[in-house]
Image (cartoon, rainbow, N blue to C red; front, side):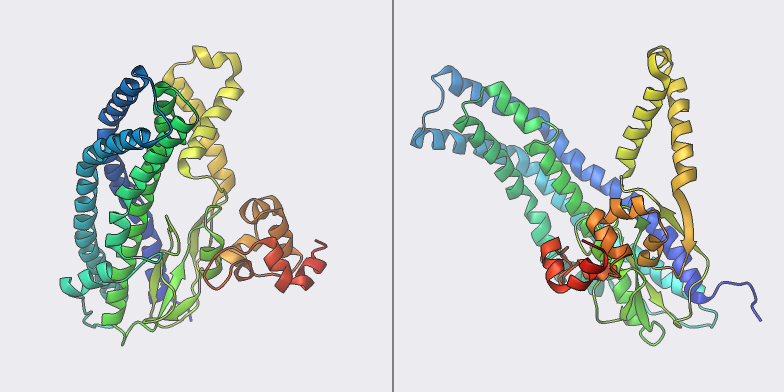
Length: 399
């Protein structure tokens, strides 16, 4: 007879999913601090570049030989000096955050196990030395923590150099070159996105390794590790195909599976089927782009009246659009439901938005599972490569 109380695994998943939401907020906050350190140098950087480029332009411009190369090298030397402090601060920030966050996450995971288990057992916690070795000595996305953090500065300089060289070759003015650097898709924005990606991904790695050490220290209780992906339209095919799968404590893949990965892991205690609900979002946009679209929709609906509305009235109009979207797109799914099964329950239009029209038809009509769309390394297969191995599915889907 059911008691109506959640099993240990049900409680573990429910609390872990809620915790993962908080971790995303924490990662976003650290990423903002990291980007802020770069932004602090941007005004001086653009001023210096504009001044140096204008001086060269005023004295006859760039030639096509050695002198141009030397002048660009001089510019980059100044850029390197200016940005060095920012990247040193970023490196220090991420190193310190990683160490303290690993300790926090390990404590949280150990406490969760202790509070969740019905029996009175002692949960082992990893030492600071073990956590540090796990975080800094195990690679993610093919390289170590130190390598990814240290690689941001040379990548930043390379972007700036390419922009300047392209501007010189194309005969662009100083103002045009500087505008290319600071534009929405320019070199400096690329460096901000790169820094944000490293920060978010590195902290996912830290959280995963901290949990992993708790699992390893309690192998007599933790039987397996369950992969948990976010149920929304931004989840990659790789993470979607792994959602709900379980792996040995010391084997199998772990997040981050890719840059900005939001997947997490939970310990499996007794392997019982999970029931209950987990949150879902039927949208492929991130929060920032949704808010831009909500405001645009509210403005379009208001028409000419928009220009006469107060900011409070505009905010209320945007809120109405947001609330309607939430009612239509935010929901819940059973905890034991995998991403693949959840996606099969969604409208055809959403499946096509997530997978693309061709893969959507293969998913619905060709009988292919999400795991079929990626290779062993997790890379999404091209349709030609997929056709070579899944010809019958293409025929079944009439593609």
